[in-house]
Image 1 (cartoon, rainbow, N blue to C red):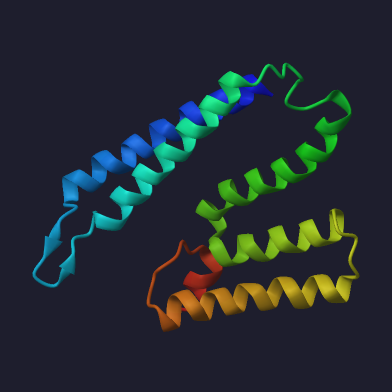
Image 2 (cartoon, rainbow, N blue to C red):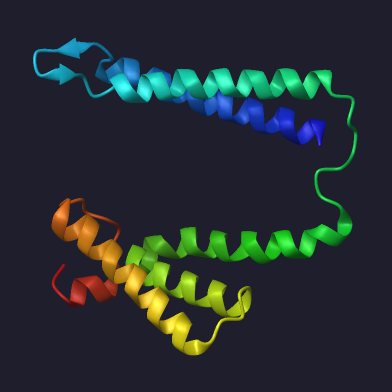
Length: 153
């Protein structure tokens, strides 16, 4: 467990340093119309690094040498990790909304063992709500696939 905590802390510190570096590039000060683009990411990066240093210090003080994942816990971890990985990878080719629908449907049915009616209603509704919120209300373009392209988005 100690090695996993230290590894995670080091990786996240590297991510925090990257955020701080990029925030400095785009400006962290205060402009005439408010904070510059890098203001909030800079402070989030600072907080992230501070939290990671605290986690690393706790891990160093702790003498716990138990493994991060026991052998019998690997299967449940993979049941969560593999669909999530497939979701991230498939988003690039089939778009966020279709990938979200498939991910939620497969996760609800496979892990949660919910009824097909619940699976279809929840997975399709969440994707539609996400589409309306990001694409239509906030005008934030999200990754799209062939389905959205065929519908004109």
